[in-house]
Image (cartoon, rainbow, N blue to C red; front, side):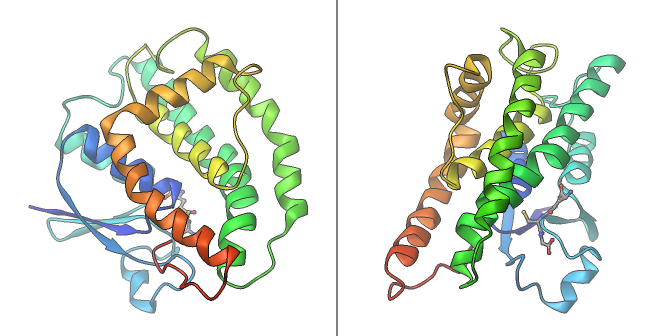
Amino acid sequence: MAYTLYGAVLSPFVRKCRVFLAEKDIPFDSVHVDPGALPQEYANLNPLMRIPALEHDGKRFADSAVICQYVERLHPEPALYPRAAADYAQCLWLEKYADYELAPLCTFGIFRQRLIMPLRGLPGDENKALDAINKLPALFDYLEQQLGSNTWFVNDQLTVADIAITSQLVNMQYGGESLNAERWPNLHAHMQRMQQRPSFSNALNQEAVVISKIKAHLNSPAKPAPNVV
Ligand SMILES: N[C@@H](CCC(=O)N[C@@H](CS)C(=O)NCC(=O)O)C(=O)O
């Protein structure tokens, strides 16, 4: 039975699910929904009116973390959650850290204020972006220390935590900020490693088209705004 993922390609939570499914080599249909203009019926998929949502086998699920866990149960290999209890908990913790600590800064603080608000013809709040930029180093210090010289964050195996963290950092980059490789060398190398995987690079290639249309529109509003954010 096919999977249908509802969302917009530049959402870090949608990207997390797309990369997760790609890592497991699971085909899925994408249905574009604009998080800024969700139709009322979308409440049947997610009463909180947020993306992503998943439809599979007549069932509907909301929230990227729930979606990834559901898919993992049905397709346990390759495992994207560690088996051992402590590693599993650490993986969930870092995924949560990405979704609830990085996201308000990288995505809602920087990306949304600098790209999405202007795209919608609204003024972005640059003070909010600057506040996020001031707060992020403490979070990067923590992640740098958690990663150490390991390849992946938990048990040196690729997990949903790696995908979730890089997904948020990508939105920060779209907002014009980059991770300082000298200050956070391990985290920077991890981000490069993650982005070079086919699962991630395919997603980013698809997104690059949208990003360049947004930039073209913001530089010259006569050019059409993409409707796929
Ligand atoms: N915890 C949720 C967060 C989802 C989320 O906040 N999505 C944003 C887009 S990046 C959204 O739908 N925002 C619409 C809104 O809040 O009105 C998840 O992991 O799926």
